[in-house]
Each structure stands twice: as structure tokens, then as C-alpha cells.
Amino acid sequence: MAKLTLEERFHDGPPARPPGEARGWMTAEERRFILWAFREQWPAARIGRALGVNEATVRRFRKTYWREPAVLLELALFEMVGTPKNDEFRCLVCSDRVLGRSEVEEHIIEHFVGDRRPPVS
Ligand SMILES: [Zn+2]
Image: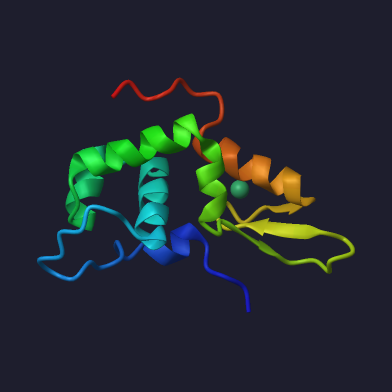
């Protein structure tokens, strides 16, 4: 069965964090939500409120993946759809199909880092 795209996962709301949970780190699902929300043009403050985390935590995560885009590849943002032989992947950000693992990895990074200027704060 096909995995859910970010849009399918989050259009009804963010992943729930148990009330009163104050841990400083975020789950992979929370990080995926942040990525989705930035693509939807949400400001960091709104993302923080939705997740129940500090706005600074949201900004810090964005800074981290700008500095080191490889962290985006740890978030399972694509799935294999071809056979190992034809090496085809589906992007869970935009649903496009991409041939080749390094190509899909580059494709994922472009979604979030691309050629925009890095965030100021
Ligand atoms: Zn894509």
C-alpha cells in the first residue's frame, strides 16, 4: 500500500503531543509536519503553536536542515515504488515519481532548501 504524502498526513492537523509533554526534542512526525507547514507558508510561530513546541525549536530545526540538508533524508520522505531493478521512487512531498536513489534524494532536498536564501533567524 502506498504511503501517505505530507499533505494527506497533515491537512487535518498536526500530530498530537500529549498535554504537558515538555520534552525539547521532536519526533520525526513532528519534523515532517514542520516541513509541510513551511511549504504551506505558515510562520514559525503558528507552527510552534500547532505542535505545542517553542517557536525557537521550529526555527532551530529549519536552521539545521539548511545547514545540513542530509537530515531531511532521515525523515522517510520518499518511498520505493519500482522494482529494485528499475529503481523508481515516489516523493511523499509532491507525489512525483523519480528514477534513481540519488536523484530522489536531491529532489527531496530541493523542496526545502532549493535556491531560496537561507532563513535570517
Ligand atoms: Zn517532490
